[in-house]
Length: 429
Ligand SMILES: Cc1cc2nc3c(=O)[nH]c(=O)nc-3n(C[C@H](O)[C@H](O)[C@H](O)COP(=O)(O)OP(=O)(O)OC[C@H]3O[C@@H](n4cnc5c(N)ncnc54)[C@H](O)[C@@H]3O)c2cc1C
Image (cartoon, rainbow, N blue to C red):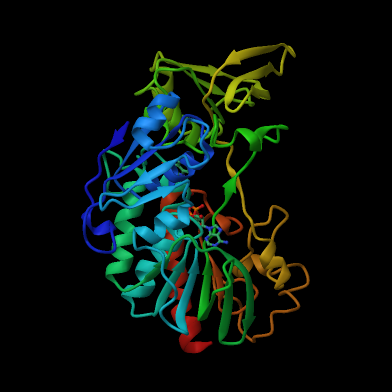
């Protein structure tokens, strides 16, 4: 299975890359690498090993059970056995340490909101750093085709759009630290310190939290066990070509589920959309509903839930339940994609006194004003700027922000707006 990309700017040394990844089907480690490479728009070829002989001949390991799988081969001859995504990032020349002891602007999250803030911050001359836990693009990076973003009438893949934004931000001088996770913050007047999971710290005069949301889980007992081995979160753009005409199930009634269903139809014979609600009307755009209805391979099961997962090393089947009748039935599948929306991960914010709503979204601007006025820890004699949290100089943009519209374009707009108010903060306090 191979994917063609043409993006010579991606490598640190300016050369194009064509990585070969060899592994067995249903390997979570191989999935993590495929997902990262796909989102990052890096050319790679996936070679699925189906027998011990093939594993010996092609990957030079003892068999399919060899823990050295997956094997990753780079064009310069470098061979990684069961590598981490970080090792791949390092090899690509993308794993960097912060180059400055202090920045004007630190952005956490390189989804649409963070990338937009990076483009506007860096192009306005702010010393800007972006910290991203995984690959650039965020949720959008998993979208096979974004069709409602202004200026792309034929649609564009999320990975492609994210890669363009990454290049744009870097061209203006933003520093992007991939595979680094912000875990804790410390904020004082005029300065914020972000602590990363690997011990590094980022000091900046202003910060933007653009960490978006994380995919919601189904909450079934063996869900984690099958993650990357039949159960996938999001539209699974890297997996579509590997389904080999097998029956694919997608859970969710939103636009991401609709997009995924249409995308999978290009590679497989039957896609079943499992929707808990009794209609798609309230959760999915009309253009997607119409297209789904016009696509014979798509089956839509309303009022239905996945209630159990079955398998061995990989997912082999699921139990579905019709919530109106209570009837349950088994369906054979090794492909279950969960497009269930997301939840923000903002526990760190509570620890530093940033206000969140009941869902964990960060509250900003006028929304901070309650019946008793501004929050007790708001000490300035001005009102918080739009998109500013109750800690001066700490802003939130995109899906993580309370009241945000969960759209690509609005995340991009919020990233740009946050930078406009950050200028005000940096000049007037
Ligand atoms: C499959 C799919 C298809 C979609 N299709 C469309 C569409 O067609 N049109 C549309 O308008 N919208 C679409 N959306 C919604 C849109 O993608 C989101 O609204 C948008 O991505 C939100 O952007 P964001 O930057 O706020 O957050 P996200 O995209 O969630 O990005 C947040 C980023 O922050 C990173 N991060 C999280 N925590 C940390 C941390 N502690 N440290 C460092 N980094 C961190 C994450 O890894 C991620 O990269 C789609 C969403 C999905 C999932």
